[in-house]
Image (cartoon, rainbow, N blue to C red; front, side, top):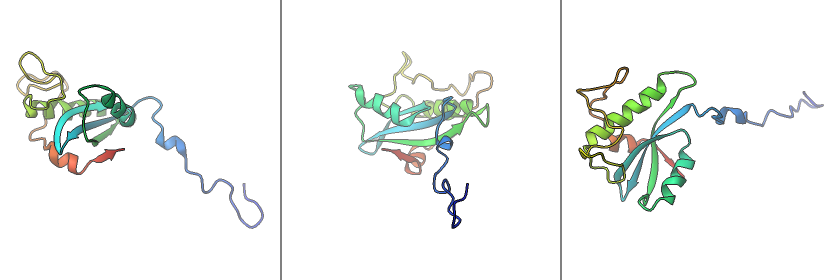
Length: 141
């Protein structure tokens, strides 16, 4: 609707629906850093809420949370798998060295991939550089 003088009442309002993921379809792969060292890799559909839950855990002491990749499952049904592929490959390559991730009996991380024994539909990503991804990622405040 235009008022006299050509003023459009809603032209300045952004469409807030573009920023809401009511179905939880967006998957963010993130890292936690403590004193510049990556100590955790995970996936969430709500980084700010997940950051809060990490802060509430005793072991969740970290300096920053950085989203290193985002996938929108609403546009691509394979994106949740892609997020898991990145997380699993990164955890395998960390070889049990990320202190905050839970370790299995074999000292490898839960959700890590064994490149020689992948589940159907999974892909192993070679040479995941978490530090580079973190340096180019989005810091969650």
